[in-house]
Length: 302
Image (tube, rainbow, N blue to C red):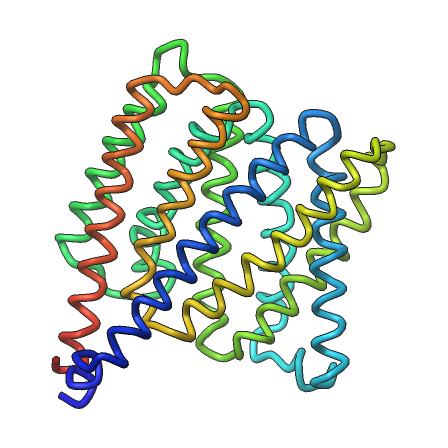
């Protein structure tokens, strides 16, 4: 009852609005980051581009650990899973950037919109969570949307589409691992494992795909690294200001913004099937988020 009263106060409403504003800003920045990644990956290897992103990420993590203490910052109840999780995300970003360059921003994001629903479907067998029939229905409807995007048996099925699907599955696995380690580890610990082991992974892979950049591409790369750090900062501020259940649905705006960048800047042509399928997937995902919020409130007796 106390939480309900707080939420009803102007302060609570203001905090929620502030959280939404931070989340929308983060979605815009992440969409711009995807556009920059696509532009660079069309001229250079996605592995090379990701390496630079992770070097900047890893540097931030080293500064954080230097201030907090390496032993304290990296103390984990599940260190092996944290390492696997960090490596997986780095490889997933390589796959996603490759999909941006080959398939396009709009169709790739339409496929990635199914990721939260895949997490819902796997949270039962993997994490032991209870998934009710309503959320299972949302997963089924989202799958219909995915089929409209993929259209099995049609010319739309290409290797590039397969790359995007693989990236989406990898990102879902990363999200499941993140929820698992969150049971024992602090957010900063997960953040630093992600940055350090991702940077280590890309340091072993990226230099083999080295290519020289033009001055303008170097500027783009610097902006890319800055947007990554800025986007994550806004994301953290969003979750500090408001409940996750209230602002999580706004993450889908990244799909909208990235698709707009793909069409307006890169001249992508989005098929009606992709638009329809993407809309169905996003709607199903929003319903699943809403059901999760209702379930959480019921568990708290609100």
